[in-house]
Length: 368
Image (tube, rainbow, N blue to C red; front, top):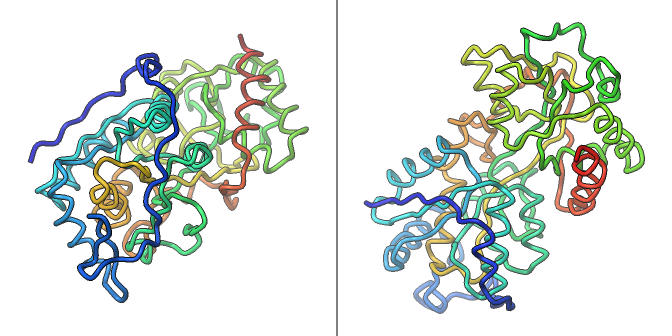
């Protein structure tokens, strides 16, 4: 099987497309014909097992000339997706298009709005999925393998599937900071001791949303203003930020992803996670959505199924991410990072647009 990986093209190249509304797509609950299909798309039959349904999807998808998957995943995770896909569905080519979260998101939206949808499915966080859902470009498909997922992570009212979750944690460089020096709340990092020595992501929208959910907009804005006044460093990309923390380019990262920190700690980097985690420890749900106008509709559904199958969940386990599937070894891989706190989950009702605007106004421009 030939599996291709391409990198996302600059968004500027996409602006040449003419903006138009995408098609309405197929209803998720469309009735199947006698052979279990509707308009060439496989439908799950009443009482049909997940395995039998996926087998029929696989057969139909083989006639669709491959499929395209957009993902912001790092190189190792993309390689893992391709490896496990190849082992599970060897007769289907999958093209993975990888890039930064915002770039991938904007590409998908521009293509769909122009009536030129290129991808079949996309991996993203709840915040990104919400933006696409608001554009009306996603199909509310419920995968058969969702029956094996943690019920707490299943929301039939949203047009995407939760496959795993991520959490944000305060971490520090052990060569530059003693654990006893760390504040036990975020307000402590607005003190002069930490001026120019703390960092967050340039696009820390979901982390910002967690602050707003925990404290309310007024207090969260005050905190962000304090970080900005303390010359918080804006470093794009989770892996990049963690690498810079390990290199001692700053002392503390306020929004480190637990799965990335786990890898660096296990590899012996001079990084540790604060034993007492400031409130909140924000939890971000992430997963797969398929597009209404997916060029390969059966393969689009197959991707969604794959990500909740044991093979797909293994992809996340290999990256220290907590998978959504309730059975198997997909539990939380870093419980020691929570400092006794329960995570604060961000659901589809969170106003990510408002969080983005506050972050931009208070921190990004404040640091400019």
